[in-house]
Image (cartoon, rainbow over all chains, first blue to last red; front, side, top):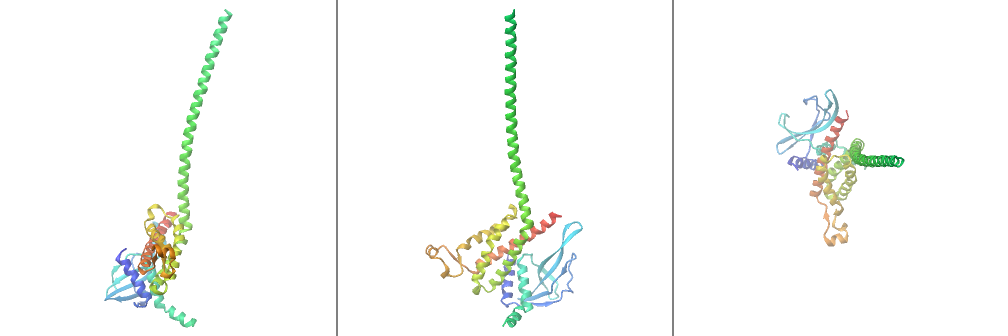
Length: 118
Length: 184
């Protein structure tokens, strides 16, 4: 198994344990290639002076020359201080679990449910 | 004179009988041979149909069952990732989730080609150990404890299952995308 997968797994665990905090911002400023478009907010965290960004995006999955379906994926990137992409992590399904952990943590739904149900 | 003509007639009849016998015998040989060839062709036809039927079944499974299997695997992956972050308190929940994998994998196998089985086999061989995995020592059956044939659930085991599971899901997502392409 690759180190990248280990990193994603650790990031997911630490996010769920609230040891890593993510900030969020609108995705309007993000320009993506090949008619891709962001379908979620952009979530950013800093670990050991390195910034990471995760978001959900849509891309065209071509089934023929001029026929396509919209597919969704999660992308994790390392970015610089100007939020330019430095490196993109290879896609693996575990990115979806990381993304769910991040959105759940940032939404505050757990705190709301705890308060509402008690 | 009369006797001689009768002898000649008898001789002619005997020759005709012999020719007829030979013809029938040779015909029978040919029919046996043709029957044998037809049997071989039928056998080959059955084999061909069987493999064709297998392919059709696999295609049907990959269209009808694979999306459901994929969705179930994703739910388990999500639950395992959440419970694994609180490993100390959620051991029994993790074991329940891992146990759910076995029937799904059995069903999923029917949709996969031999070439797509690499990550499936890796996960399946880990899942087979689950019968001797216990989340605490007191839950181990006495006989197993005596012969030491058990594993106590630890975070490394769960991490391994989770990694293999997410790699398999990634594979199936790609196969599903290819299927969409092939169906067009």
